[in-house]
Image (cartoon, rainbow, N blue to C red):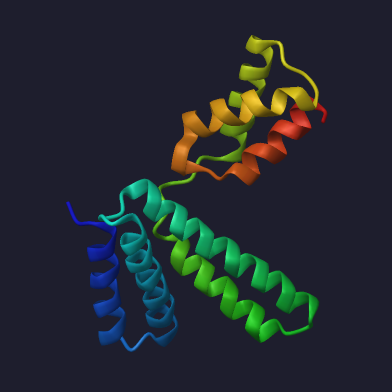
Length: 149
């Protein structure tokens, strides 16, 4: 099985051949982050770390997109959105919000949780259950709605 770095390098070559500049620059940045993380850890990065790097890149671009939209710069906001979509292709299949909501409701009911105090146990259980197939922000938002906190 290819390492995340090998997958990105292969996709980078394909983008180079296709002269896809936006994809090329996005993947180069991701590859740099992978290499920096590898140096920091002193070993190859695993799938979990790779997914965290991709999520971080997407979040950065989402934040930048929001700032550009606020600053009335739609062309730059659209570029950030496209880059986030390029990165999102490297995430595992995402779980739908309905499935997360059902799992949170079931957990809250079975554990008898309510209010803000229930957030910790819900977050821990749902992140363990869904792992990389969703993000903490989505779980947190749904849990707050259900717990009423």
